[in-house]
Image (cartoon, rainbow, N blue to C red; front, side, top):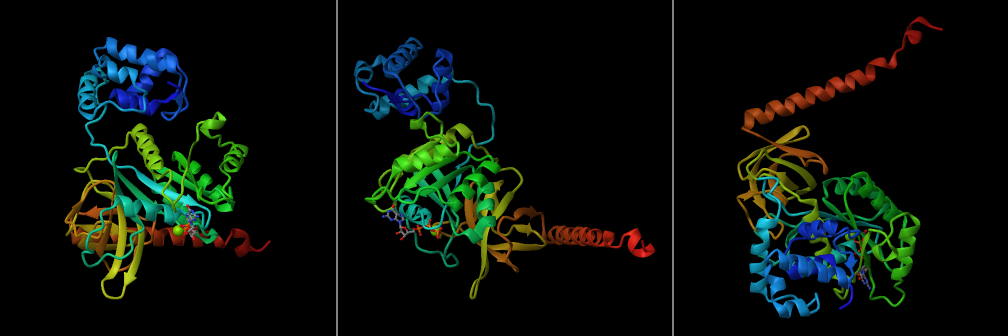
Length: 389
Ligand code: GTP
Ligand code: MG
């Protein structure tokens, strides 16, 4: 057996990643992340340790002898997981976990949309469009490790604000870098946005199918801006992928899930509704269509929403697969019909108890804005202007 990745070992032994990191901490083993590799001796030690704790997976000689990659049979794993649970620290929160929101950013034409298209076609069961939906810039993918919500962003230099907003909505940022082009201005900009928003980053080195692809060049270019890939001794996760052949995309999804697991993302579906506008547009027939990411609470058809200085009542709602839905909980992108004006992307959305409350809120905001504007205009005339020098 050679080196084994931490998350692979955790999976094989039926313990979660946090527990595995605790064990490593206990053993004084250093690591950069759950995707770091550990030595064979450490693996043996951990197996021993878990066996001593009465862990079933290690008690099975076959599993202990097999390479870590060859996972134990599914039922044994499930049993092992159950056995391991009492040993874990008590759940710190009663708030349910939610799916990660992942924003895809990078330089123009580096393959962001193509990557998402690949994921979408392989991971989203296409459903009959339910009437109002057309294009939604955010969608949900179902992976073996659960739901992941993706948001696409444009790479063109003109769209700085959209990238910045995308980074702010994200739990994780995927920076897409074409392997034949390496770091470009909007790559650096996207990285800066993710860093400013304090969002963990994963780099997808795309287009590795091209003969001129140079993954090492991308890695050394990243190193030169102090983002050091794991195999260069740093802690940046880089995943070579191809949106054309699909190579590496499963790995990318796996890394996203692992990163999300460590972030411990939670939101209360029973709590107060909070969301953000991803995009909006006016459809000639349907009217204003707004894509909103539910961040907390639950949205229902019939709810009153306030965005900026406009409000609306949800007349219809569809999920990212185009199905009509009646309600939507945290980490769900939905397309909403019901606003009279198109809200701006990046704006926060709140709910109001009824139409009267919604109107009051909008009026209050308009007043605040006018006051602020007046205050800005007022100091234009200084004492000197009036009295003369
Ligand atoms: P913007 O949204 O304009 O910033 O571009 P983007 O990053 O979304 O790139 P897009 O997915 O539109 O891809 C740009 C071009 O690269 C298209 O012609 C794709 O077919 C091509 N492309 C994307 N991914 C790959 C890949 O993995 N391999 C190859 N060979 N071509 C790819
Ligand atoms: Mg694109």
